[in-house]
Length: 314
Image (cartoon, rainbow, N blue to C red):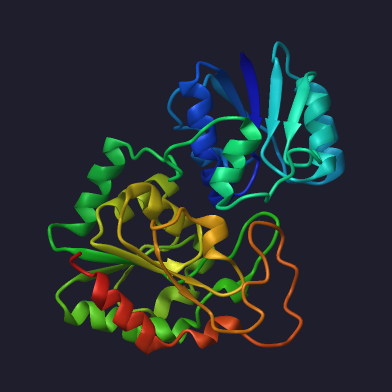
């Protein structure tokens, strides 16, 4: 069967759909993916897909309409919409000219089971024995990173995140000044520290001890950096999902988001907020904080240090 799979954004969310797409391909289906600019790095290297259609989504309605008129697809037997928006489902029906299986359908409904990767597999109608994200690292990316890291064991910290095309959620970030004692402790144990993040994180993470690579690496190079680390520690973000894809021991901090909704069981060591209102959402648009508190502040430096020390060298 020729299938059009649609996950236009964001990078981390697209990674969660990769087990489902892999299973579709393993079951003999011919899969083309509709991607947006933020999810393109996931799909342009994905093994076994027939092609990637780059859409401008998310964007303003007029721009999307004009693109859709010019880029209607032909020859697909089914489209799979990895999302919950009824409007997005209608758009996919227009551009695919075929039946649409969607998380917006009442009978399939997104968020029926956790983690999200398992729910995406259910929506696609496939069994996934491995729910870790699929993100192959290329050899030239590994070589590039080895030139930076050298031979000394290192830890990757990702203090930023919380930003995607739909929204910016700084409440997903642990207070920046608390990363200084964390990095200092790791350095005192003889490890190097590399700080990962996007160009938007560059100024925020500049005070964290270690080598800042924020804004200097592609997603593929960030994956290579993380894959070679002894440990990853960061906020719930794209780099954390890359660490899971690489099988690297990972300590991930959670405030408003729910680790059980986003990560396969046993793939990370979660540090959760103790705020009564946490978590307040899982894999959707952030509803906003109404009590005025910062739930990430309840995660203490001592707890993070203890957890990292307990997982270094494992």
